[in-house]
Each structure stands twice: as structure tokens, then as C-alpha cells.
Image (cartoon, rainbow, N blue to C red; front, side, top):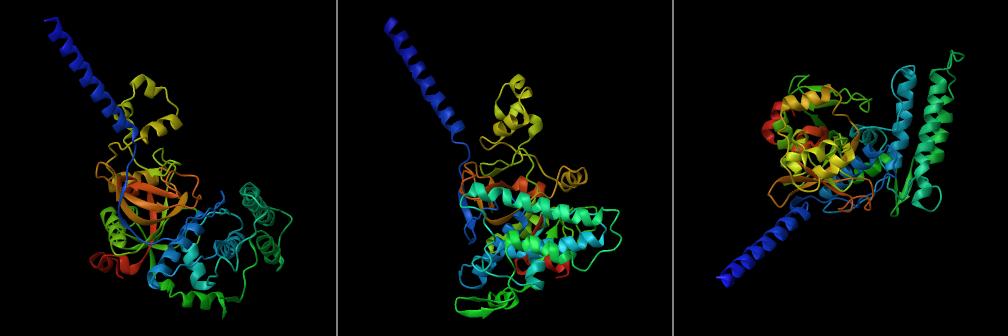
Amino acid sequence: MKLLVLLSLILSLDTLSTDTPAKDTTDSIGFQFTTIDSVGITPVKDQHRSGTCWAFSTIGFFESEVMRLNKGKQVDLSEMFVVNHTMMDRAEYVIRMYGDVAFAAGGSAYDVLYCLRNYGMVPQSIMPGIQYGTTEADTLPMHNELDAISKGYINALCHNSKIKRLTPVWKKGLQAVYDTYLGQCPDSFIYEGRHYTPQSYVKSLGLNPNDYVSITSYTHHPFYTRFALEVPDNWRMEQMYNVPLDEMMAIIDNAIQHGYTMAWGADVSEPGFTRKGIGVMPDVDKGADLTGSDMAKWLGMDEKSKSEELTKKPLPEMEITQELRQRAFDNWETTDDHGMQIFGTAKDQNGKLYYLVKNSWGTKRSKYSGIWYISRAFMEYKTNTIMVHKDAIPKEIRKKMGL
């Protein structure tokens, strides 16, 4: 009898020791991804903490377009050529508005498209930008210094009561600042043995600026019309196509399935967007119910700790509706704070869909070498705009848009 009890106890302990590690293993693996579709992209770059994500992300988008249009040909285009032209344009706009609008380093995908159409483009090797010093740490203060000087320059012109009339040379002074920090934009250049202007170089790449459109999804304007999205970085007042949320997502899915990437303007201030390469929208209201943490412990956590807890592994996410998305935009919960490039899809270990997104924070600042995995819920909720080739839009939606 004692032997039977002992055997029974051993068997029960063995069962417990088997179940517990299995549960721990499941919890410890976090996110596991399997790629579904992936469109060609160029290498991840590093914007060095400057406010130029809009340039890096959209340049990456057009580099992928060159690959698509030219049988995989890879090019490395100059971000600072675009930044130099754009900031001078923005300065002129702010001056014309007497300084009553923001002058900042931010921008949108449309700034790159505008530059492509009006100024052209150059290879990175022709205008690499000025790099102060020899290490990454040396280059970090450069853009902060440039932003401070250029903003001070514009503020001095706009808000000095002694200045009643502008001289015609104020642009030359500011242009000299940007040329000093970013490099001078060439009027012509020799590349791979051929002579180009920035405009002729664009044509050689097969890029037609008229083929690209921006799309958004908000209810404060009628669907299937165009409007200028009311965010500070859309200072050029680009007219975007407005479609319902489900159709915006259908455009994203269709583009990837047919070999197109997109420039993505989004809000990444949510706790579900991590520096480790994950973007998810877990139901924060459920808190510890989702994470398995003790409720008292959960309530005592700071926001950073809650974010870490909510992004350790796949969790049930918020259900995103058109109304929820609109409310977040209207009450300033959704801002236009980052630009990246969408280029593929993946699934996690539970079969949930994610989008592959190329960031411009270098390869060492995320778990996945500069690539982010963005859940469908996050994409639905926090997308401000996408820029895409019009042929990537499903025909039935394109017809409704009047394209």
C-alpha cells in the first residue's frame, strides 16, 4: 500500500514538473514570426535622431519603386538633397505667413514627391550630406544644432518688431546655413560615366511622379473626395484621397500581394510600439487580465513598465472601428509623428497577421535589425496616410476614387 502511494506521489510530481516548464516555455518565447509576403527593399539607414524620418522612409519607398521598375536594380538616393530643398521651401512658406505657422524639421511623404517632381533627385554618393567627426556620437548633435540655428534665423525675421521690410538676400543667408550643414544641391553631376541633371536622373530611373497618390481614412471629410489632412507636417497642404477604413486596408493588402511597397505616415506614441521592433494594440483597459500579472501589481506600474508587460508576447488586441480611429485623431491621441515603409506581411505563432515595416533608426536599435512587426490592429488605428503607386490600388476602389 505504501509503495502504491509513493508511486502515485511520484507520478503526480512528474506531471507537475512536465506541465510547468511547458507553460514557462510558452511565456518566454515572446513573439515568433513567419514571413508571408515580402517586397524588395534597400538596406536600413539611420536618420541619427534627426527629424527627417519622412525623407528616409519615402526615399526608401522610391528606392523600392526603382527596384520594381528596373528588374531589381538597387539605387541609394540622397535624403539630404530632399531635406535641403524642402526646408528652404518651408522657410519661404513660413515667411509668407509672417511666422504664424510652425517651422520645424518634420515633413511628409509628399515633400519627397514634390521634390522628385520639381527638383529631381541625386544619388547618395553625389550628395552624402556633411558628417561631422568620425563616430556616430559626433554626428548626433549636428541636426539639433542645424534646427536651432535655422529656427532662430526664421524667428528673428518674423518676430523682430524692428524689421518692417525684408531684404532680398535673406534666402541666401539661410541657404548658406543648409548648404554648410547638409551639403550643396548640385545642378548637374557625373554618375557612372554619364552626365545628369537631377531631373534627368529621375527620368533615367523610370519614376513618374504623377503615378503616386496619398490615401487616408477619416470621417470629418466625405469619402471618395480629396482633402488636405490637418496635421502640422502637411504644410504643403497635399490633397489626399479619403476612403473607408476597410478599403484603406484592402489597398495595403493588395499592394503587398502585387509587389508594391508603401510610404507610411503613422503615430508611434502608443505603449504598444516598442523600441524592440513590435507595434501592437493590446486592450490596455484589461490590464493585468491580459498579462497574467497580479492586479495590485499592475495598478502600481508606471507607463513604461506597463508597456513592457503588454508587449512581451502576443495578446488579444483592441477591435478598431472607423469611429474609434476618428475619435483618436480628433482628440489628439493620434499624431503625425513618424514615417516608415511598409513592405510585407507575416504571422505570429498564433496565426495573427502583422505588417513588415522598414524603419530608419539603424540596425542596432531593434530586435529585428531595423525591421518592425506591426499588427493589423495597430495599422488600422494609427495610420495617418500611405503613399502608393496608383496601380497598386484595387480597380473597384480606384474607380470610386476617380483614378
